[in-house]
Image 1 (cartoon, one colour):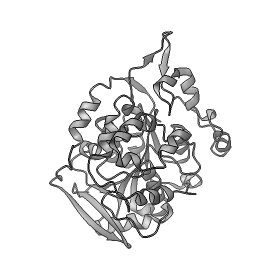
Image 2 (cartoon, rainbow, N blue to C red):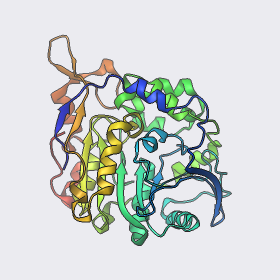
Image 3 (spheres, one colour):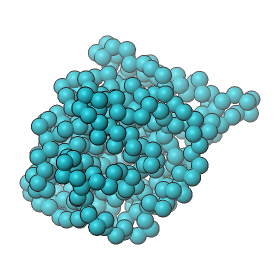
Length: 366
């Protein structure tokens, strides 16, 4: 498990990111085509970047309400030779909302159809947040179509350790995708990581382009995960799997990554110092971790990620002791770093008592 940390400053992250996030829709990469595809009665807006034909493409699955442009900084930080496929879920961004709701368990046929239309037999699949659930379902349902799996800021679905109720309530509405000022106001509490210090980063990411999609599309996507969980099936995942998790993610607490790492046989856990959106806000550091994993030889893929994470400068309280932000709470609710580590530990959550007998001890350094 990758969990050795090295102190490095975070200065300059915001300014560098803003060079990557356009104030208006970005002109398409010469090797990237934006198209509209009809797959099984659903219409998807798809961006496909050409790359080295000896490498499988990287298929990106976004989170709830996120358009394909949200992780443009991450795509730009990847090896330019890597083919990349992105898409808007039905009812999100430029993809029309379906007539009827759908369930996450039915979506592997959608991804298979997408690969078929683009002429690919197999892909590496990266899923973030809700998209991590989709990536897991696809790998479990169609293992022949997934070579390697990257799971970012995600969990095993209904049977997981949830975030703070106040944080989860923020997720029940698509307002942050429609209202830039609201996105900036709630960014630190909702997403954690780098946007605690610079909430405008989240606003710029979520509103890099127009067309957030109808509210109905957001609610369809939100409801699609009801009752879904991968937890009992995770031992069946045979693909080499990289799990990326932030130690300040209010939406998906870190313990969920530890649980998944314990259950997925060929998995590597890489803990970074950041939050839910750091795949985009800190792409210059996380993209190389993903690249190393994808390009490693088969037998070495699990050990391919660099063995360090980064630490932001710590805050000191009035008494001189180390202080840290409580997950899901504003800075004025800060408490000691020791108390924060206990809150992040598996034993701190009541659901851990139910899960631990199934998978054994899941504790570890946080």
